[in-house]
Image 1 (cartoon, one colour):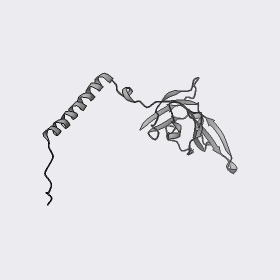
Image 2 (cartoon, one colour):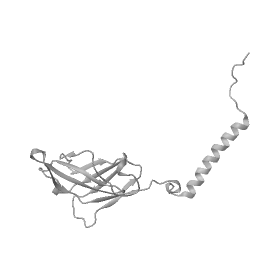
Image 3 (cartoon, helix red, strand yellow):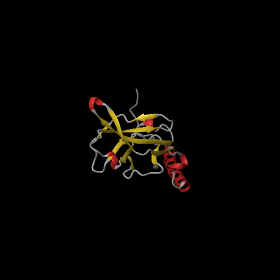
Image 4 (tube, one colour):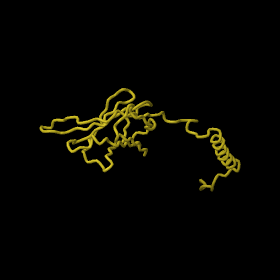
Length: 167
């Protein structure tokens, strides 16, 4: 599983961080881990949730909210899902902190900087090969070798053991 770590603990960004977020189709195989700024680690914060803007401009909030029971590293994480990665481009997100008050009133207590994950096209064809020339030659040798073995088997006429004769 790809882990994407973003450290927002300093929370002083002139430009929002932009990092490689994986490839289209890698949903359920990418875990986003965000280290929150100290200003968002307080007792009056009840829950956190992620807010996303997809490549298509769609706004999506995380299906779950996360209780304020963070690890000692002040990290919160989420597994990315299919609707977030419909095509290549930039997936923007932030983490929101909320307080659940009396009569279940919800108050937003803080937001992280908006961050950007760059989602790339899934590599295909020659893009997958590190050295296309040497890899193509190696692949051709493997194919030729397999084809030669099949061809020799056909020429030998090996038909296996004879079956029962009919009457």
